[in-house]
Image (cartoon, rainbow, N blue to C red; front, side, top):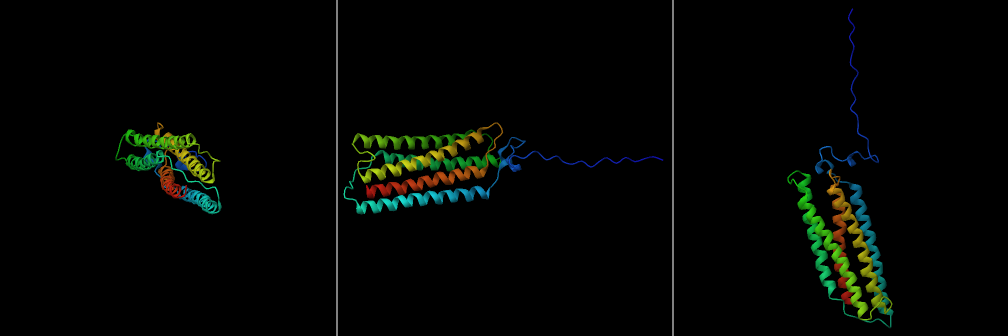
Length: 221
């Protein structure tokens, strides 16, 4: 009597996960569209972070208004003209970042082949952001040359406080851009769309915040 031997069922092997997130694996095809995701956690995190930054600057604004009303040595001074050039640079960087987002989205969906164009716009954004920070430092040097220092009077103290705190947050945004560029430039790109969106939200918020601070300083100092 012949005996029939049945082949054992085959089980598909699951690739190892990193931190429990399977989608974090680089795509086997080497195309970014395989890691096109939209993470609710990242969106929630950025809004919480922006709310915290807003509350911080709101608290300092209130302190400035109270201090100006009660201070007897509040002195007004002319803002360094380079601040207006810095404003143009920061707004231009927001525009270049939006162009980069569109080019990255086209690459993700396969409608644009090479990465050179989106990578160029990302680097332009990075350069404009660095120029903005450098311009803020030049503004501080210009005030120092006029004898206006951090402890000269309450108005100068708040000027240095607001501009320095904003510059630190811009440097944080530049760190996020560095992460985006690094992930996008790898031989097998591992950039998540949600990562770029989070950095973009943060960067645009820095632009809006700076416009607010510039108007505040122009009216108060």
